[in-house]
Amino acid sequence: MPKLKTSKAAAKRFKVTGTGKLKRMKAGKQHILTKKSQKTKRNLRKATMMDPSNEKNMKKILPYL
Image (tube, rainbow, N blue to C red):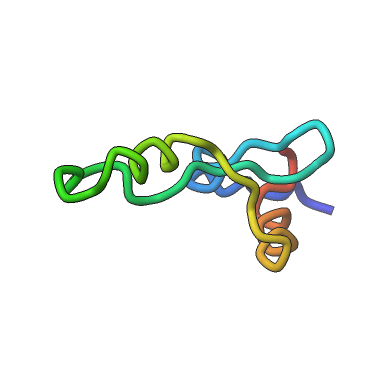
């Protein structure tokens, strides 16, 4: 069976935790930050886990992570 290619775009955006879950950063922290409150910007800094409904598809495009 041939080797599977890793999606490089996804590999740069997700990390795998010790338990095998996918960790991602939140969107909305790049620009137009003046209208966002300090609390919102602070909460956007934290990483979060990927939703389990998407996890199966992500594992397919990230076979070796």
